[in-house]
Image (cartoon, rainbow, N blue to C red; front, side, top):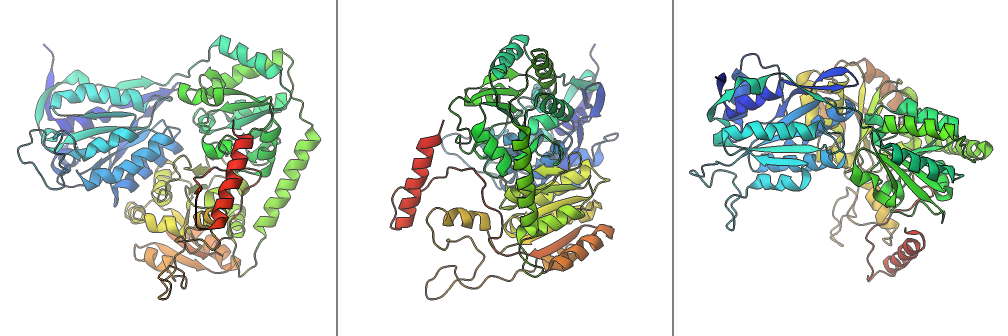
Amino acid sequence: MTKTIRLTMAQALLKFLDAQYLIVDGQEYKFVQGVFGIFGHGNLLGIGEALENMRGLTLPFYQGKNEQAIVHAATAFAKQKNRRQIFACTSSIGPGALNMVTGAGTATVNRIPVLLLPGDTFADRQPDPVLQQVEMPQNHGITANDAFKAVSKYWDRIQRPEQLMTAVVHAMRVLTDPAETGAVTLALPQDVQGEAYDYPEDFFRKRVHYQDRRQPAADAIHRAVELISSKKKPLIISGGGTQYSEAGESLAALAANLGIPVGTTQAGKGILPWDHRWNMGGIGGTGARPANVLAKEADLILAVGTRLQDFTTASKTQFQNPDVDFVSINVNTMDAMKLDALQIVGDAKESLLQLHEQLQQAGYAAAWERGYLDSLQEEWEQEVDRLYNSGSSTELTQPAVVGVLNEFLADDDVIVCASGSLPGDLQRLWRTRGRKSYHLEYGFSCMGYEIPAALGVKLAEPKQEVYALVGDGGYLMMHSELLTSVQEGYKINVIVFDNSGFQCIQSLQRGHGSPEGFGNEFRSREADTQRLTGRYLPIDFAGMAGSFGTKTYRAHTLDEFRDALLNSRRDQTSTLIDVKVMPGSHTDGYDSWWRVGTAQVSDNPQVVQAYAEDQAYFEKYHR
């Protein structure tokens, strides 16, 4: 007779999660590392009770301050761990649950595993409508948690305690799948969380999930070798998949031995050190000139582990050689088929090794002139140096501040960023050196990711210094987990680039017909125009952060910034440096284009002209 153990559904869920393991390349990882959460009536007496009272549970609980933020922290942790370990996140119903939806979208877009456990309304419906319930007259079975369906790779609602046994197995299938991973949502009605059931003891045994490297098809490699061999000027685009596959050495060897230059996406940056001979820097709308120039000339693009989103492809205008073809290496077939590419569906590391071997056997070598590539790199390094030395000691440009930070940080320090103008400056200018030292979320470009993500990275890399680089707009969106970092004793360093508003969007606006920009700077309202065109708002970000118990610094000059960096390095608690930079001093695009929805008709003739120019460019170069 099968032995059973009587547990509530919530207790069984946590006991199951505590016994999940993942093996990659022979190394075993405990998969679920803990639970982030905020308690309310929808989860306090279910999951909350289990976390508080279950004997033997080894899942630590971290108290968040904002539900969206805890998902960002969990996402950053999993990203930094190459998707081999995760956190679960729990919330109450209604607004608590809905706050996690943006975090779910961020995780899913970036192909990062995170487990979401939102509380839900009563399955038996007897107390309905309960506090915070969203009632739908056409379907009483719809709740706020249905909003997760659009941003989850797997979604289920546990309406009976025994349904858990099927749901969590499928949840683990998706969470450990390198191709189909993302946010997984299990909606947990608050009454069902507390219902008891006699679960089989075998359900809680140690379960090991194997993430075997997916071998590419031999025929696919052969087809790719034939196509590449017919080309003279190939270019590699390296994306986040090369990071998660730990394919850096394979990529470097292929590039060097075959003479193929490499451009990197935001997620792929850092897979090669900045001074690697074949590293041509970031590519696309926030990329550098060398990679963007080569992309226009290339007759073949080898895309490795990238989603090929519009910033990477310059809205599909980046590749202007009429004879250009595409080969894509990806574990995800949807990503592999983009741009009508010849597909190699498989692990990035294994696919690069096999492709490299067969191209060498075929005697292939790219025809790029080394002197030409060297000149592009040299000219770009001169441009980076110029930007790092822009402004003055008292008029701080954003690139100059980035340059001082880049020079100061140790090789294994980690920077975290996501939104605004900073990702452009970082992809173009940041000279990466250490492993996993460049942590950018740019699949969703989610404002507010930076500070909670820094906490997640610190949990993943507790011995390394972690720096969140955030604009004033991003800081105001979400800085709640700065308090959590203080509470938990996980030191993070926040650098606020105060440029008085949403300057990258202001620049985009000005570039498409708005002479002064509208509604993007933090200014007071003027009485005569009733528009936000008055004086800049003086905001004391250091004062805000200091109230959380962080150590704070203010910098109006580069010397003050250097001193703040040095002093904050010695601090034992989380720090914040409030840096006042010149509005609009970020870098602009280099040999790339980005399609946005410009108005076709306007009372402003400059807008109409901008539309005409955009349309002409699109029609000329769109593939």
